[in-house]
Image (cartoon, rainbow, N blue to C red; front, side):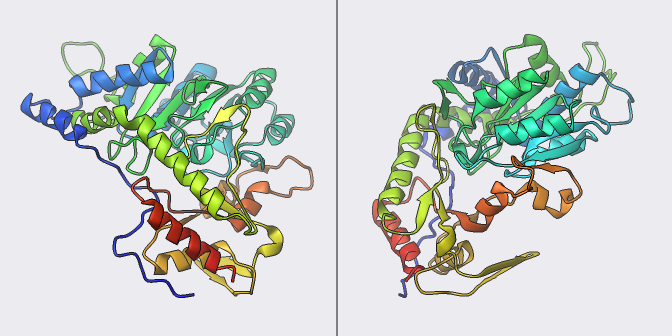
Length: 410
């Protein structure tokens, strides 16, 4: 079946502006606070801490900066600093979510650490508590676990926390994709020992960029604040006693976030409606939606994804940066669906390629739940894809997306 391309591109997840944002950008402009300080930053730090349910929040230039400084802080508190010219980890291992975006992991490398990747479990597509326990049996000295909530779906946090507590490890919670998602009634971003959210352009609340470090510790918040402003000491001149970073958020970016926050519940409802419409529209197809724990969690539905049944996969190959497929009647694959969507001017994406499969990290250790080494994450990457999930997509446009996907199985 041939479909007429959309006249206006259907995005995976683009910023949704409401007009309130420009009010706070203009406020910063009129007050001449076009810098990394100002009322907007103060306000969103307060509102983020209040909404997420923690004591303190520090606004930063991006979620990646918040992750980096979280790693640095956790490492220094646990291990001390062994050398002023080496990263805080300096050869030590950190257990990391395997199926995630590279930013989750890169902070470990910034601090000269070694990421050990923990395989995915099928119920939420997040870190497997069973694989994590196996990892501690292999590497008992590890004291930091970097956990990401994939596509806005909370991980099995209590099970992961129990494993970490058993082995005396702390949790860095990467809630970049999951702002507004709940786990047992608590906001993600409040569950770990060190926590972050992101305001990147494609997130459910955006500032075009930006991120937030979240904590219940005043001392930790102040340390992050100091590091993010070039580690300036409290002296009447510019004095530096440790390495710092230019990681503070702009007051202009904070103005966008400030204007976005009142619309979070609206965005959550729109994203959920998209997920539910896909779920209904794909009935009868050999696919399933990205799963979540319906008893203990409420996702933010940031991205709607599908997983093709194993016996409904047509031949597909991925080599380096290229992908190919061979169509078969009644079957399809992520490559075919994504190429068909792209031909119709709609944006989908592959599932995050697991970190242990990345050329950058191919030599890092990887731990699966079973000793046979069969990877759940590799299988999800092979059979899964992210669908257009933009909350400005109309029901009519989404219905056409559904028909395009269905046509791939004809």
